[in-house]
Image (cartoon, rainbow, N blue to C red; front, side, top):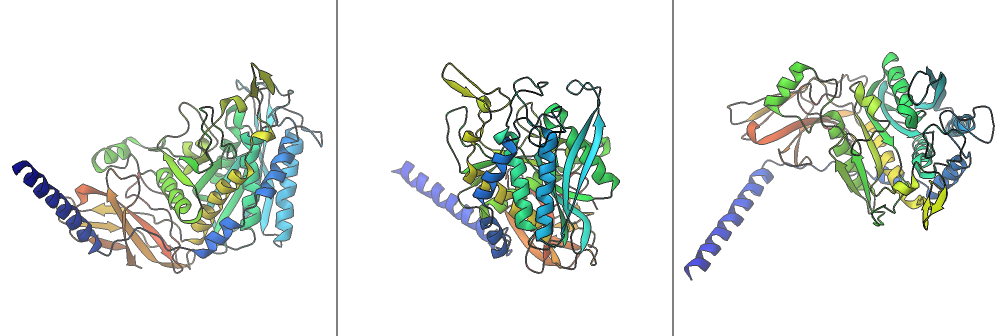
Length: 465
C-alpha cells in the first residue's frame, strides 16, 4: 500500500511540475506560431502536377543532358535543354509583363578529373526583382545535367527524369506560380549545370551573386523531388528531407571560440533556414512531414547547395525521403529481373508538386517578410533575465516592417518553441528567462505577420547585412 501511495505522490508531483512549467511560460504570452497566411495556401494550391509532368517529360526527352554532351542539336543534349529552359522562363516573363530578367551565367572549367578539357558551364537564371529591396535575394535551384553509369559517358541515353528533371521542372513551376505576384524582396530561379561533374554551376552562380552584390538570404536546392519508392522497399509520399550544415566552413578561429562558450553548433543560418521550411510545411502543405536532417547532405555525398555554403551563404537541399539507387546514375537496363535507369515511369508527379509547393511557400514567405535582423547580440550571464539586441532594419528597404519577435527553445529542442513579439524596438529583455537554459533568436515581422527566418545571436547565426 505504501508503494502505491508513493507512486501516486510522485505522479502528482510530476504533473504539478509539468503544469507549473507550462503555466510559467504561458504567463509570458509566449507563442511560436507565425500568423497563418491564406495567400501562401493559395500559392501552394496553385502548383500543378500536370504542368510538372509536361516539363519533366520534355527534359527527359532530350535523352542525354550530360555536361559534356552535344550543345548544337535542337533535340538532344545539354545545349538543347538549357535553351528550352531559357525559353520557358522567357515565356513566363512575357505573361507577367516582363517581370523576369532571364540570362545565362557561365564560366569555363577544365583540367578537372571529370572535365579534363575546357568546357563552358552554362547556367540559366531568371530574376524576379523585389519592389523594395532588389538586392535581397532568396533563390530556388534545380540541376540541368544528367548522367549514366559512367560519369564520363556523354553519349549513352540518360534521361535523368528524377535526377534532376524533377528539381529543374519544379524551379520552372515555382516561377510560373510566383511571377503572378509582387514581393518586396527578390526571388531568383536558377537552372545549374555541371552538378554531376563537380558542382561547378553552383560555384559559378555563387561567385556571380557575390560579384553583383546580391545579399543572398536563402538558397533552396532541389535535387530529386519525384521518387516515392525507396531502395529499402518503403513507398511513401508524405515526407520530404531538408539537409542543412551545422557550422559554416568559413568560420574563423575567433568565431569557433565564441561558439564553444555560447553554443550555436545547430544554429547556423542554413540550419535556421531548414527550421523555417519545416514550419512552412506544417502550416501550408497538406499531408507532408518535413524531416530536418542535421547534415550537409546525404552521408559522404554532395549537392549544388554546397558551393553556396562554401562561401558562407545560407543554403539547404530539399529532396525526396526514400531514394532508389537503382534508378539514379545508372544505364537503362534490366538485370536479374531488376530495372535500372532514371526513367519517367519512376516519377510521381503529385509528390513532385508537393515538394515544389513547399519551395513556393517558403520563397514567398521570405520575400514577403522583412530581411532577417542583423547585428543580433545577447547578454544575461549570471543574471535572472536575458536581453537580445539587434540593428534596426533599413525602413526604405523594409517598408512592410511592423517589428520583431524574439524566440527561445530548450537547448535539446530541434524547433523553436516559444516566441514573443517586441514591437519596433532594437532591444528586448525576457524577464526571468535564464540565458543558461535556452537558445535564443530574433526574427523580423511584417505588418501582415510574415516572418523572416530566425537569427541566432552573434556571428554563428548571422544571415549577413
